[in-house]
Image 1 (tube, rainbow, N blue to C red):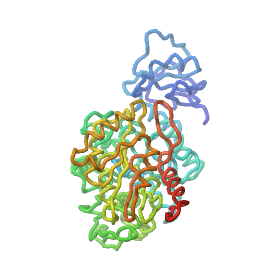
Image 2 (image 1 turned 90 degrees about the vertical axis):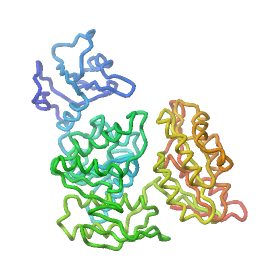
Image 3 (image 1 turned 180 degrees about the vertical axis):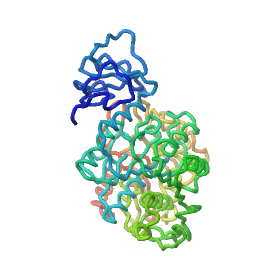
Image 4 (image 1 turned 60 degrees about the vertical axis):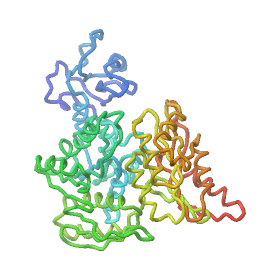
Length: 505
C-alpha cells in the first residue's frame, strides 16, 4: 500500500500534526515505522498499556480512549482520543484498504454459519459465479489466507486487507462470510459493505463473554441494525422464536426481508421426507413450487441450504431465471468439512464427525441421525475449558437422553483440568441413565473405544470439534483431527480378520 496522510484517512478529525501513514495496527508487537497504532480493549489486555511500545517502534499516530499520563509523546506523532477506538479502527482500515468485493453477504446465528457461508459459495460456483467464503474454515475459493483460522470473524485490519486483495488482485466479486457475535460486538464488520445478511438459529452459547442471552442476541442483531447496508436484504429463519424481534428491527430500517423455513413466507419447506440419499421436499419460493432432492442429511441442513439460497437471490428476486437456476443448484450441494461428515463404515456401522458444540446443535444432530440408526446411536462429546461452563451438564443430559451410548471425553480443556470438565458434564446425566455413559480420559482413546464397540446397524457421531486440526491443552495446541483419528482406527480394524470397513473420501 502507498503511504497516505492521516488527514486523507480521517478527514473528520482535527489534527495537530499530519504524518504519513504506512499501515494500521492494533497489535503493538506488529507495529512498523509510520503505522497508526489503535489501542483497543482486549478480552485480557488493554491496548493502552502498549502505547509506549508502539511509539518506540516508530508509530506515526496513536488512537486511544485516553493517553497514559506517564507517556511523553513526541510532537511529530498524531494523537486522536476517541470514545470508541474499535469503531474508529473499522472506519480507518476500510479507507486504508478501499477495495471490497461488490457483493458481500454475511451470516450469523448460534449454529449453521459455516455451512451457510460455504453453501452460498457453492451455489454461486455451480451457477458459474466466481466466489469465496470466509469464516471458521478459513478462505475457501481464494488463495490469500491459510485454510482454517482461529477466529470466525477476522480482526478489522486482517479482514479489510483480505477484502482489498480479493477484489483488487484475485478479482473475486462475490463473498459469503460468517459474522460471529464477538466480531459484531467488537465492530469488526462495521464498514464492510454487506448487501445481504442471514440469521440461522439462536440458542445458548458464549455466555462466558456476553453474560446473558439478551446481550448475546443483541450482539448478533447488530448485523441487521447497524452493519447491513441501507438497501440490503435480511434473510431470517422464520421458525426461530426470535424471528419477530428481527422482523421489527428490519422493518424499522425499511430493509427488504426474505423469510425461510417450515413457516417461511418466502422460502417455505413443505412435504419434507427423509431419503436414503438425504431428503426431499417441496420448496414454495415466492409463490411457485419446486421439487427438491437435497443430498444432505438433516432438516437443519435444509434450513441452512435455504438460508444460503436466500442470500444468493437476495438482490435478484425479480430475475425469475436467476432464481430458478439457483434453486436447481441445491441438488448439487456437498456437505461441509466437519459438519455431519461421514467418515466411514465398520461392520455395517457408520461413523460421523460433527462440529456440534452447543446444546441445540447436539440435539439437532442426534435427532437427525436417529432415523438412520437401525441399531444403537452412540455419541462422543466433550466441552471446552475456559468457556461457558453452564452448558456442560446440558450437553451431557441431551446426549444421554437422545443417544443409547455416551462417551464423555475431552474437547479443548485449555487451562482447566480435563477431569473436572468431564465431572461437570457427568453431573448432568440422571442416575437412571448412568449405565449408558462412559467417562473417557483422552479424546484419542475415547474415539478408539467408541469405534471398537460398534455393532452392525449402529451409528456413532464424534461431536464438538468437527473440522478442527488441533487440541488445546494448557497453553499449547497439539495436532488432533477427529476425522483423521477415526479413519486411523477404522483402517487398523480393517486389517483384522472378519472386519469389513470402508472409508469415505
